[in-house]
Length: 213
Length: 268
Ligand SMILES: [Zn+2]
Image (cartoon, rainbow over the protein chains, first blue to last red):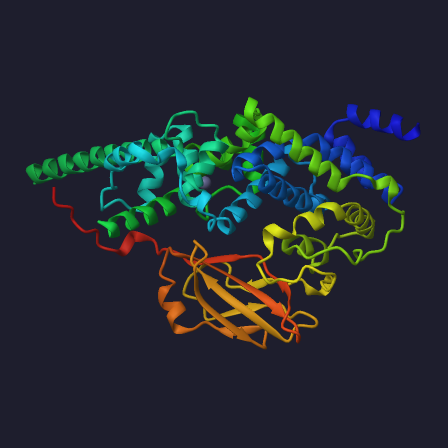
C-alpha cells in the first residue's frame, strides 16, 4: 500500500523530482525502485531509437540495455542542467556509435537493401565525385550553408560516425525508396554546385584583378 | 577513380566530423533545449557548423520520434525486456552482496560497467547497483551470445577480475600505433590479440604472455591516415580457455589537415 502510493506520487513527479528522491532515498530497495521508475519512463523512447539503429529487436534490446547500464553508472554525474531525456540521448548516441563500429561485420549491416537491384546502378551514375580542390574546412562551411537538415544528419552519421546507410534510413524514418543514399547523392550534388559557383566567382575576381593591373 | 572516391570519403569524413571548436555535449544539450536562447558562442557556432546542427537535430528526432505501426510491437517487447532486467527490487535484500551470483556470465560491456575501475562514486550507489545486478540475472545470461566469440567459455568460471579492456590504441591517433596495451587479468596466462579491418577480417593476430605487445611493421603500414582498424584482446587461462574478451576497440590515424597539400588540377 505504501509502495503503491509512492509509485503514484512518482508518476506525477517530473524526472528531476524523481532524481532528487533517488539521491535522498533511505534504502537500497527504495533507491532501486525509484531508478526503475525513472528509467521506465524512457524505455519506449530509447527502445525505438535502438530498434531503428540496429534493425532487429534482439540487438535493439542489447543496445538499449547497454544504454541504461551506462545511464545507471553515470547517474551520479547527471546534474540536472539539461532534461534527463536529453542526457539519456547523449548516452544512447555514444553507445550507438560504438555499436556501429562493432556491428560493421554483419552482412546485413553492410548492404543497404533499399539500394539493391536496378535503382543502385542509376544512383551510382548520379553519385558525383567532389571537385578535387575541395578542402575539408571549405566543404564543412558549404555543408552548413547549402545542405538541408536531413542531408546534414545523413552526412554526419554516415561519414563522421560510420553508421550504415540502412541504419540511417531507419533512424531518420526516411520513407523514400532509396533512403539515406538519396540524401548522400543530393548532398554531394549540392556541394559540387556550390564549389563550382565559388570557383567561377574566384575566376571572375582573378580576371578583374588582372584587367585592373 | 577508386582513389578519388576514397579522397571524397576522407574529405567528407573530416568535413562532417567534429572540430576542436565544436560544441561539447553539455553545450549541444544547451543548444537543443534553449534553441535561440543559448549563449553567444553556442548560437554563433550553431549558425556555421553542419556537424553541430546535425547533432542537435538528432536530439530533436530522438525526442519526437514516434513508432510506426510496424515498430510498436517491437518497442513494447524491448521495453518489457528492459523492465524484466531492472525490476523486482522487492526480492532483493537490502544488503545484497557486491559480487554476482556464480551463474552470472561474462558480457564485455556489462562487466566493465560494474566491475571496472570506475564503479559508482558513492557507497549508496554501489548498494543500488548490486541490487540491480542480482535482479538482472535474466538478461545477463541472455546476452552472452551476441558479444562472445565462439570458443569462449560460458560456464561459471568468469568472475569479476576477468574484465579486460583494450587500453591503447583507441580513437584518433597522430601516427600508426607503436604498441597494443591492455589491463592484466587475474588467472590469465596468455593474451590473444587480433587486429581487424572494419569488416572484421583479421589482419594480424598474436598470442603473448605480457599485457602489451609492439605493433608489427605490417600493421603500421596498413594504418594509413583515415583508415579505421579494429582490435580486441582476449585473456586465456592455463587450460587454454578464454576467460575474458574485450570490447572491440577502434583506432585510426587522423587525416592531416589538407591545407599544405597541393590540390591536383582537374581537367574538364
Ligand atoms: Zn560544430
